[in-house]
Image (cartoon, rainbow, N blue to C red; front, side, top):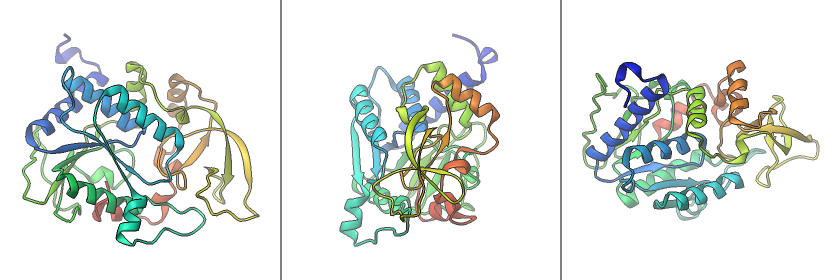
Length: 304
């Protein structure tokens, strides 16, 4: 076993994340791991295996399904949960829309991402989760860079960036009042490149959508390529092309653009990232660009 002085940077990041996961298990009664089927939450399941095997995870996997997900992601989600032998809880935004009488989003690229908040808060209340673990990272977006690793939410699920707790010497304060919950980010200090280097080191299998493939895409006015989907409300004038693309991040198919790439392996993707000048969300997520504070506004209202 290498001593701390000989740990490389991935070992250090891994050790920190495992420590955080074990802190969650020790401090909370009903935690959950929010699992999207994306690379970050997949990396979290590998970290959870290292933290708790040969025992079971001390939390279920929870997926908030918008109904606009890529088919590859849904298939991978089910396969991974079965492989791990862990409990998977799925709650659908479509059911929330019907039960709460919410309005479906309109426009050409109708994203249900803002409506996920209602479903997430409902599932937290249903199972009385007091901590929700997720794969958000500080390098992704400026609002996420403001959050602590243990991020307290009030009994309405709202986040107040001014109500942050100090986190000194890897000491995390999970004390909450009844009705409150904590969002926990074990890989908050990782970068996109760190995640891919970890995936390569651990030989983690990913959905094929992350690697170069042929796909029908809609060319947006910005020049971005949005994967063709039945959920888009296109006009006759919209240009549809076949391109060789991959996805850097995975969200709703209606708001997550692809990038042109020939990267067919993890090694190839890492080489791409070494030359990238735009963050993954900045390059691909349409919903983050609705306003200067788009992500922060959603987080204040309970979004993950």
